[in-house]
Length: 172
Ligand SMILES: NC(=O)c1ccc[n+]([C@@H]2O[C@H](COP(=O)([O-])OP(=O)(O)OC[C@H]3O[C@@H](n4cnc5c(N)ncnc54)[C@H](OP(=O)(O)O)[C@@H]3O)[C@@H](O)[C@H]2O)c1
Image 1 (cartoon, rainbow, N blue to C red):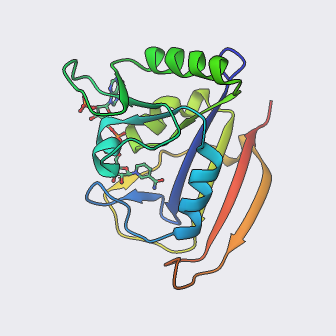
Image 2 (image 1 turned 180 degrees about the vertical axis):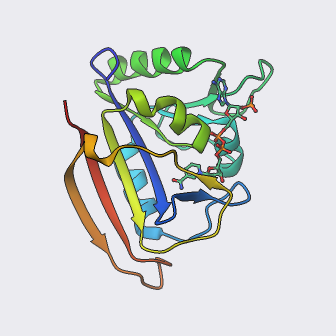
Image 3 (image 1 turned 90 degrees about the vertical axis):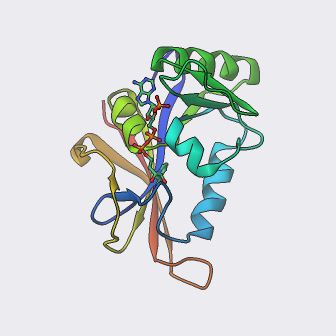
C-alpha cells in the first residue's frame, strides 16, 4: 500500500509464466478482458510505455499513467511520467479526488518487476497451458500470498484457453 491506497497488479499468465509475445498477448480471452474492464474501471492504471504501445490508445474511464524515460513522450489521453514515484503520486491524488482506494499496475514485465515489492493485491488470470512467448512475469513467492477468490472459466469460442481468475492478497 502507499498512502492508504492499495497497489494492485493485474495480469494474465501462462503456466510457463509467459505474459506476451511480439509486444502483444498470444491468446484470446474475452471473459478475462471483461473482468479487466470491470475491476479497473474508475481507477488509475499505470503501465510501461511498451504496454501502452501494444494497447494503442488510452483506456476510457480510467486515468492512464504511462512510465517512460523519454521526457518528450506524449499521447492522447495519457499522463506520461518518468519515475515510479511520480506515477504513484498522481494515481494517489486521483484516488483521493474520486474516492477510490486502489490503483492498478497493468504491465508489462518491467513495470511488474518494479512494483511487485509494493503490491498488496494480485489479480492473476492463470492460463491453463504453456504458451510460447518472449516476455515473462517475474518470479514471486506464492507463500506470501493468500487466495481471496477464484473463478474458473472454461475454454470456449470466446476464450482460447481455460483460465482461473484469482485474487491474491499479501499476508502480513
Ligand atoms: N499478459 C498480461 O497481462 C500483460 C499485461 C501487460 C503487458 N503485457 C505484455 O508485456 C509486454 C511488454 O512488457 P515489457 O516489459 O516489454 O514493457 P513495459 O514494462 O510495458 O514497458 C517498458 C518501458 O517502460 C519504461 N520504463 C521501464 N522502467 C522504467 C523506469 N524505472 N522509469 C521510467 N520508465 C521506465 C521504458 O519506456 P521507454 O523505453 O519509453 O523509456 C521501458 O521501455 C508485451 O508483450 C505486452 O503484450 C502482458
